[in-house]
Length: 187
Image (cartoon, rainbow, N blue to C red; front, side, top):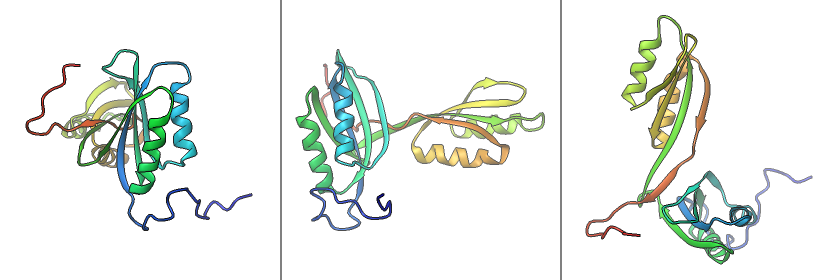
């Protein structure tokens, strides 16, 4: 039996100073073939990537899957991970974005207890965060909200007093910010 509090050795990390971890968004474009995404997940697991979120979806490119992974790691560890991902069969491209370089959004559905005296308060609170009511029953109100993880956390914490029944979150999707003078892609 292993000690879960013991530090795990990860190759390439011995020369990384303590406290140099940063959060990066990795966008991995993968050919849509059987086993391709499994190989990407396998690399992430073997490299012991500290994943915060993992989102999978279609890309703007034909027959290509877009994997967006939020990873907290040192520059050294991240460079090794990216190199391994680039070598993986069916990986077309790996894009590494810091939080400052990325536009990130998350979707959340929040089901809140509703009573006769509180529904308008819940709906009004949700609207302050840009949330829309997607389901309304005598017992519950379900809100849909998109935004940063921090925005969603804040709304969830404010709704706690009404009694949250369920929260479903998508994880962050991201893309690079446009810089002044960038030419839009026509692909």
